[in-house]
Image 1 (cartoon, rainbow, N blue to C red):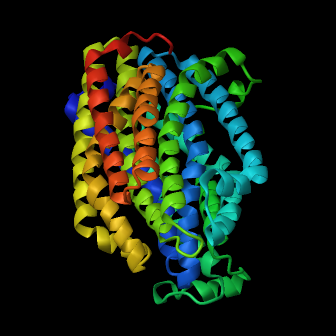
Image 2: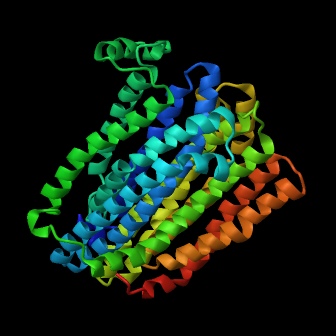
Image 3: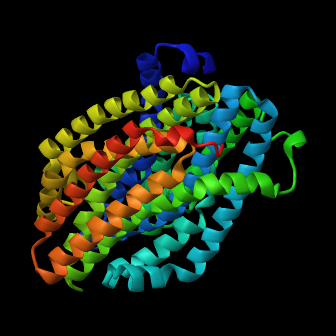
Length: 473
């Protein structure tokens, strides 16, 4: 695969390498969409509260996942550069040390969730009533089991950096099928289930599984990811020769520092983006919900799940561009490295346009698929109508930012994202809602404007090419 990355027709190779990655990253979000669909089939009161809870918790859990992913991106930047330069021994050493680092981070987040989930839900986000109650337990389990997604994303990122883009798709597809089966069994248990899932209760009764409702979705996701980890580890060990006994070593603080120096800006940058989504959740929860009516929180939880798919598809194309950028820079093919980012951006923009159009045309049906409450559907549909077209801008920013990270210039992307979020999105949102007392539609205008601003800034910065002088990897 490396020969094609370094020498094949660039437009074709980026497409062939990036499309599977975009699909694979998009499949990551289907864990959440499957859970939302299953939970939406519970009794009306329970379903709405559960959907509102997971809408918030997904963003909170993503904070940890994205911190870990930043370190994975740093590892990929180093590995792809070393792959292009043909330095095999350094590839094995960096891969092992990165695994130690990601494992330690998962332990840290697990402990944080155990003791701080309730305070985060109620005091930081401002969730109320049944949403806060359910969300606390769900968040504790999901983040407590975050090692499963940390390691899964890390190992698939390593595969991608070394030239494999198709293998992870099969494992992710298997994980989604398993997640669906387990979620049906654990959410409904032996109790009532909608006709489409009528096969579940008899199996649950046979196995003695209880009806866990929202918590069943959490355990199903964690278990599915853990099962998929096994073949993923085997593939990395046997196909790429990593993590063998000869590579086992105590922490090498020089290598860890190298990964951390590149990775922390990417981690913080992605956390900034998730923090912006959490800020929107908090603003909506405080301004447009009450103890009795939390339909706005439920609606935002659904549309943010749909939006996360756009985000992850963009990260897939960005991951492809990172690999091309790193390996071609390692081989000193600078012009080819830069051109790969433009091609990946073009392909992703086309996908975002199709996704936005499908959301716009079928938005009401898509939202009602998860929650048919009229207030929820109306609130969510208005959001999609305003923000949907801006997914093209969001995608452009994501892919070009990821490509710059592939060159090792992670601080540049952190600065750009922080400027947009903290100087534009959050101040403008607070002004519109709490000072001018305008409706949620104006808040959606701010979000759409933010996404297009990302595109403008990243196109300008990528064209300048200053990131090509980075020598950190």
